[in-house]
Image 1 (cartoon, rainbow over the protein chains, first blue to last red):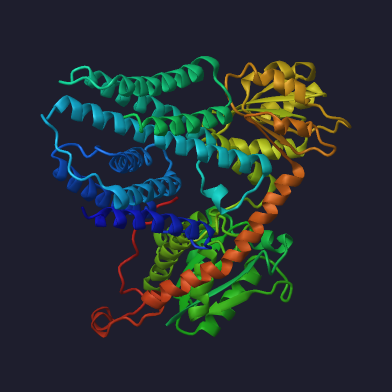
Image 2 (tube, rainbow over the protein chains, first blue to last red):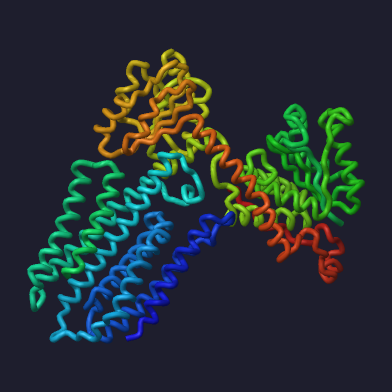
Amino acid sequence: MNEQNLIIATVIFLGGFILAVVALRSEKKPPSGLNIVIAVAGLVFQSLFLRERGELHGRCPITNGAEVLVFVSWSIVIMYLALGKAFRLSLLGVFTMPIVFLFHVIAIVYLSIADPGARPPDVLDPWLEMHAAMSLLAYGAFGLCGVAGAMYLVQDRQLKTHHTGSLFYSMPPIKYLIDAMIRLLLIGMLLLTIGIVAAFFMRELPTALHFAASGAVWVLYAVLLGIYFVKRPSPKRFSVLVIGAFCFALLTLGAL
Amino acid sequence: MSIFCLGVNHKTAPVEIRERLAFAEHSIPDHLREIRELVHVNEAVVLSTCNRVEIYGGAEAIADAVAELTEYMVSHFAVEPGEVEFYHHESEAAAHHLFEVASGLDSMVLGETEIFGQIKKAYALAQSNGATARRMNKLFQQSFSIGKLVRTSTRIQQGSTSVGSAAVDLAERIFGDLCECRVMVIGAGEMSRTTAQSLLSRGAHSIIVSNRNFDKAEELASELKGKAVRFDDWENCLDEVDIIVSSTSAPHAVVKKETIERVMSKRRGHTLYLIDIAVPRDIEPGVNDIENVYLSNIDQLLQIAKDGQDRRHRQIEVCRGVIAEFLSEKGIEALAEIPERRKLKSGDDTLSDPPGNPVTHS
């Protein structure tokens, strides 16, 4: 199987990140919308790769770890493009690119060493497709939430130390980052809930481990939201928690 | 036919001179009429602000026009000959000067945006009084394009240049829009007033003023359209506010870390920003260690302002590069020769062009 489109997407995201860093350090402002253009270009090649894999398997291309990672990356980019502007967080794209790049590199290495090849389903089950797609889109929202958390920690540090370089002035206000984290958590929870409910209608129920992993992620994020709305922890702690939660969610992908 | 600029600014004349030369806004139409009646001046725009008084014009014989206008200024504003030294620029130099003024490169606060609106207003006034024609229309329209381009493609506006603007900038980096922010001012001195006014100008509301002398607190509160609270009571208002500006003359810390810690436990995650512009400091430095609380003192704000000024100075050459690049593509339209066909048709190269696009005030 050819990973050409995935490699092109990876190069685009790496190039985009480098370009954004250079632009931040440059005396001139970068053209507005540069991050969006790069993200769209990367998304096109991600989509082409996923379409090829989907045609290979005859179903949603999440049959192995590499595909799942690319699908999660695709979801993160989709979430950024859909919500970044609305949340007034254009710089979110810059922080997203290294994560997407890392996921792609792992996927490329995995596929080049051990591509399991075509895995067509015995019977095509739309509920299974729905379950998989919604769950991974939820991971995209949680991933972007983690990115917003990381941005919060960076800007919090800059505000505490009064380090006011180009990055400081390019970052969004921390209140917007907190608001974005909560909204992304709510969107992610909604998508994950739909995904889990869809699983109950599947012809063949998932394994107990699969259920346990999905349930654990759902409970974790439900607890996080509960903590936020009931106890209102400091945004710094909350940011650390959402980053940690996404790392945990990524680990559970192994069980899915 | 060419263009020129004659005037004084904050670099060439002290405020005592600038205030005498300043054109009162209501009298500008009369001045424009009188200037147009001068023998050698064909068109004119008067730009009169706190930092500059400049007249841009079009004339066949620039030297004669400049001499005539200088005479006009000296006689109308009762300045002694030799008391004021007007600078003047001709042709490309005049156009370049206006482009730099419109870009904020000639301002006292580099990159400030107010001048752009003032130029638009000056041009609109001249245009509506029939004092502009082809040269001035082209010149000013192009200056608006350049001013916008410079501001959007460079970092000339980035960073703060004063203590007040640094404090406001930091507040905006924390809260974003300040419209929903409530402010408390502790101490009713000049620094408190200036900083509070900067915050108000960016949308903050609901000002609470507290001072040892309650009369002064009431006075400042009334000026800022806020409310005064007694000095023993300010702690009870802490959970109502988002920003605290402190500038008392107390010899010891007024705002203690333990007080803020106590308050933060009740604020349900709401961020608090404290601005300490007093010397000796009013707020214990340890307050900055509390999560979700940010503290800036006078030195930090001064440093941010200095960094901002340095950054803007470094941008001057970048901006000039942007202007040069723009002009290398488009040229200075006001100096372009009018096509022969149109000249023959109208028989005049000053009034043959349609007026510029309508001016919108920013």
